Image (cartoon, rainbow, N blue to C red; front, top):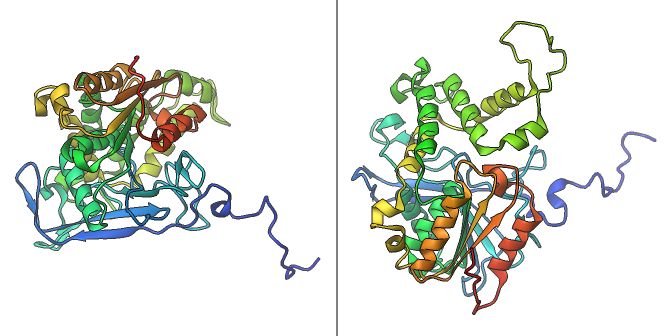
Length: 398
């Protein structure tokens, strides 16, 4: 057989982005807001950009929109493939696509990189038009509320007055909840997973250790560093430490145990990588520094720390007083970063405020990241919540 004979594609050789259930190749868009934007802090930007992606088709009545909100280390690329050569698809590709739990054959899905991010949206690494240099730590302090308001401006730009649902996990859950609070008439349903109404002291402490790893790296230089430089060691350590909080002891033990790396000398007294788990964490750190900005990490973790619905509104019940949409809160038994009781408290507060709310708790040993991983039980919950017809009788038992 000669090399120049072109064979028809087989099932095994078909491109992954063309497989059933895939949204295929996607490209990001930029929303440019060219007016002054005032942050909660009172600081002002002359304008901003949000990078976003969309999947599916917007219907004629513009009422089939599902907004996806990403977590701390996520971005706008939540489904599909940017090129056939991508090593992996968007971060929630297992949930979003034709026939999947968030069915792009039925819904028009929008996901934006948050204000303050570093994947195309305006953030600390963006150029300050007044100086021609990156903002660095001159960027305004950003809050979850600022992210929500910027995202609402994007929806207004797209002509979306009311979304069918807004969905998010972890920080994305905070954004989803606050969107339903701040813009109640614009949100029919809110689905928040593995999230909280405010971070615990322990969660704040983990964030502070990460920030200190970055700021104590001499290459941070008070936030003033070149695009291809900066506190790479500090950011990698911050990511390594944070990643430990996203998984569980059981999942780490199952995946790595105390297995040594190939070629490791059991009797060697060295600080080189010996255990597989050490190599895994170092890989997590190194891959993170190639796609994330250290200053964005500082800003977004501080936004997480400052998020406190009860303090901002007087109580959780008062925070949810004007919510109009139905709500589903999902907790995971092995999540020790935002444990089930914190998620359950949100659902109970919604119910006490007289809202149509429900709570589901999934038994898993995968830790905080359970909402990102494959789970037929989770898929069924999401699909049922999105596709059920009105009216709906909620199960208020917790």
